[in-house]
Image 1 (cartoon, rainbow, N blue to C red):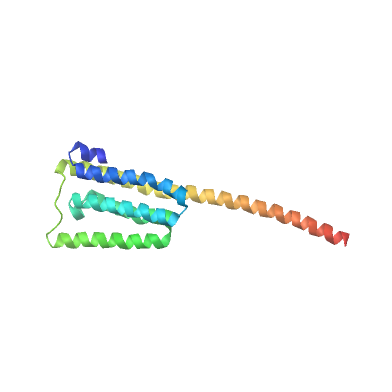
Image 2 (tube, rainbow, N blue to C red; image 1 turned 45 degrees about the horizontal axis):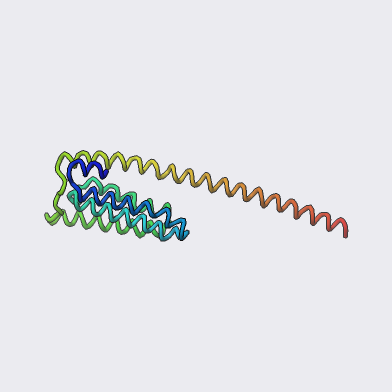
Length: 177
């Protein structure tokens, strides 16, 4: 995505994407270091929200190709930080989109920094990426669910084994008494 912007000479948008990507690379390390999924999930959602907001402002406001990507912000928050965070980010996304539409209705939208050819390519790349992200979200959920179910099954087997050992010990103790 940054490459498209660099190709067309829009270095501000490319820098926004590259900077967000660089900061996002630190989030897994922060998660391993702190173990704080709530912090990391909200940082990821906030980073995505800020990057998309910047791209949206550079690409014409409510007509921007990146605006549709805001649907992913609450999804990221939900997957990592939980329902409460997802609701908060959904409210912020609705507020941003509403503000952009009001801004457009007052005929004072942000300037379009990208040209028509770049807009078409960015719009195509954005919609293609959004489709892949929407596909990836349920795939990640399914994989995580299957892993959790396998771990729960293993725990159930261990508990059943411990129960059997205790049952045998109790039966032996009753027989000896």
